[in-house]
Length: 171
Image 1 (tube, helix red, strand yellow):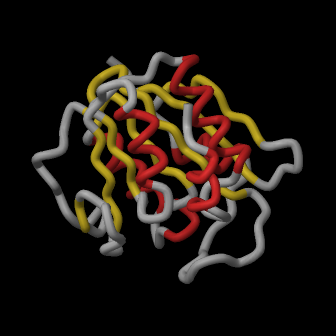
Image 2 (cartoon, one colour):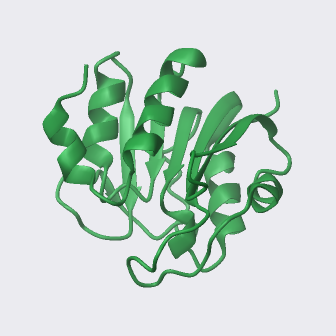
């Protein structure tokens, strides 16, 4: 089980509800690796621990050189050909900072294997956080971002501040 101290490290970036949804999805959908975590600077160690505990390869990618991030890159600008065949991709609390969120989703899904799963956590209603802070997402907006994928679930937290989705890349 994950250590309680990890919850303190992620703070605002990955809420308790969001983390619960990721943990649940890992079990419910039997998520496997390799794993790609896009925009992972603030939570990569927590998610790495979650997947490596089951023996799966995990890559964290972020534009900032946070300690422990595997690959420093601006997604989707950089191709990163070494990353392919991803079974589980995560975009957690990151799309609101992207200038063009749908290009981040397209880039990420291009790295995924057929039947790979994509987990998305995005804010619906939050105060401004890190700069740039450009977007808030409603369920229909997330559905649009995930067009071309099969949406397995799309839920909001009890206070309608965050939205969580699991989608599958077609075979």
